[in-house]
Image 1 (cartoon, rainbow, N blue to C red):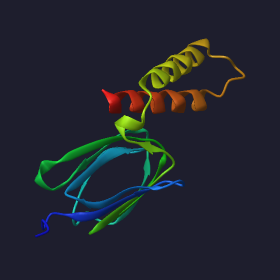
Image 2 (image 1 turned 45 degrees about the vertical axis):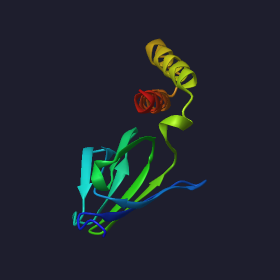
Image 3 (image 1 turned 180 degrees about the vertical axis):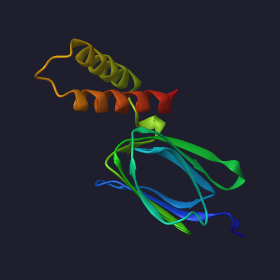
Amino acid sequence: MADERNFELEIITPERVFYKGEAVMVEFNTTEGEIGVLKKHIPMTVIVKPGILTITEEDDNVKEAALHEGFVEILPDKVTIMAEIIEWPGEIDLSRAEAAKERAQKRLEEKDDDMDMIRAEAALKRAIARIDAVR
């Protein structure tokens, strides 16, 4: 019997359906701060900020992934996450993520006038999300 606390969760990227199933709660970062969504949440649309996505399923089974940019549509009985990129920890190359973090930090420290600081900050946030998901 399905848990009465469950809602439908679908996470899609341009390349694949990343997750489709039922969840008790989903947590992630938005441009306005962290959010946790339960069934019967008020309808809203939010913008994703890079960080860890946590899915709590029935029986308190928890799954985590590195979530990058995207949008989320929240309805009382369904949450749809449209992500640019999302990765399970097993899909992440930790050494590559650490190298990306170092490159982004170096670019930010140099403060080159010609460099796009916003892009460097976004690259740093993505690298940190990947590292956090693996650890």
